[in-house]
Length: 246
Image (cartoon, rainbow, N blue to C red; front, side, top):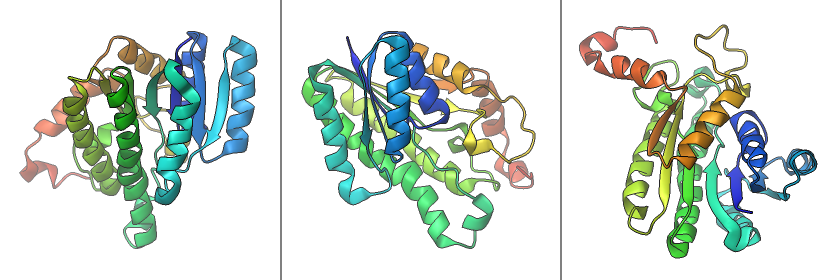
């Protein structure tokens, strides 16, 4: 059976996506910081779907160990490893980050630097292999900077641009690169932010992402209608947009 490596499978979309792939008979390697939680999830998915599931520790924020840890994951996947999904992210506290540079740095490093470095390791692996897919979660927040989360948006905007270049690089080697731009999804990242409009469930988001992977899409908004919402937001002239409280 084909195997997929999911980095950031502990909760939210990553956890739902692990379930989605397992339900379609994929073996899994689940990677993330909370190894104990991943071990429990791996046991549950393996029992429910009769697939092979391994849990492996990878800390996206530890740049010194990141490459070696990911290479161990790729080694564990062997020749059956067909894809890599990056679900890790850190919304952080946008308000605190305005005054606390440590929080600002963590938002930028997790959502861009660590993510890009992890994707480089994946790109080198699949480029050499000559097949497979790489799927990474960016965000609609990266389509236009807003005062409410501009650090997070800047990091995700950078990640989107990075993925464009990676898609161009890996096209001829035969590796598909999918950029996923979620809107509001009911996960810990939006917990405590009040009543938000158009919130999707992690399960619905996971189904949309799985479909994008199997259909070899390039860029997909989750849910789909965010493509049109962000088209309108991007079309607002800067002279007007800068006056808005968003």
